[in-house]
Length: 107
Figure 1 (tube, one colour):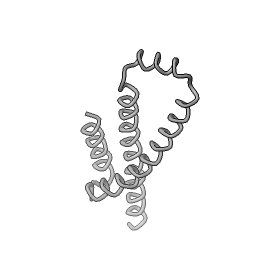
Figure 2 (figure 1 turned 90 degrees about the vertical axis):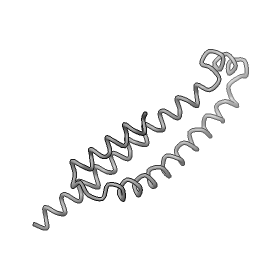
Figure 3 (figure 1 turned 180 degrees about the vertical axis):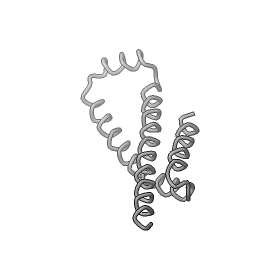
Figure 4 (figure 1 turned 30 degrees about the horizontal axis):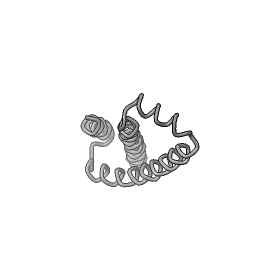
């Protein structure tokens, strides 16, 4: 659901811009933002693993029983997906803004 809504919103941003080269922009900006987000996610997971070594096991098991076995990964994936599309939308907005300003200067 996040993918469908995110792609639709990004398409709307491109449409409000200069309405050209959507797929070219989408894939190129997706690669860059995806790489940034993967590095960020690895860093966050590393910090999380380090914290888990510090927390006593009794506390960890009580937190895990309260939230459920896979709830942490579920919420982490939802947050990462949302951040990915927000970053992609911001990148596309700045790209469209720069193209629009360049076309205004040329005329």
